[in-house]
Image: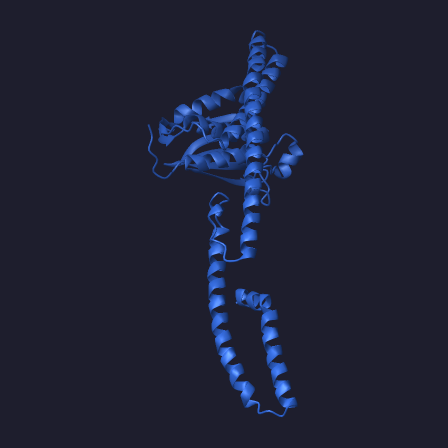
Length: 329
């Protein structure tokens, strides 16, 4: 119906001209006192012939419109195969579209080049910054004092942020090195816990964890990042109490804390990119990137992550390890 209205509006001048000519002939016959039947029959014949042409032109225009409607949903590379022009204006429009497509291709190529340069730079930076971090850690390990322990803890946080940068850069990379194998879940959890052992001791947070004895088909490095990020958040927002790691169901890893929790209005958005929520703004250390990366990585691993929280009582993060069938090495 919308197309019909547009078609009539586009051809309104032709239709108005046709009716105007009929009125002129009718008035002329009236002025000369000629019988109106003499003009009515030619008008009816012309009307029927004209209606046939209009129907034919309308059906052809509608078919062309539908074809273009399908093409506009395709990518720019496929748009080059638009239907052949049926008139001078259509040919001009197609020439204009071709110019715009070429310009778009050049802009896309330039944007990809700048993006790749940026990714290369930050990747090199992230790897280079690890050297002075490792050097500082070695120097600090030679002495045991409250200050050295505090600095080692801060260095650990810096290492986490650097690792987060690398994961963020690799997330959309075409060469992302996902390697799916059958893994012992305990072998992934234990190293992650050891990394945070200093944080647990310093903050006097109790860890509740018993061996799970569960095998999962996944990528060890990427799942480790997810677990470490969840543990990092739990330690960041838990001032006292405990953090528990357990298998809630045969295929659901549960990390539970007794921290400050998440407000109900913030809970649906915590996995959005850049969203920190009320507690994150109050804490002033939240970036809104960690849980977003966890969500994206879980999607790439074929698993899911969800959160449940009660303010001032704690938060529970569930990593559902049940996944679609994946071939692994």
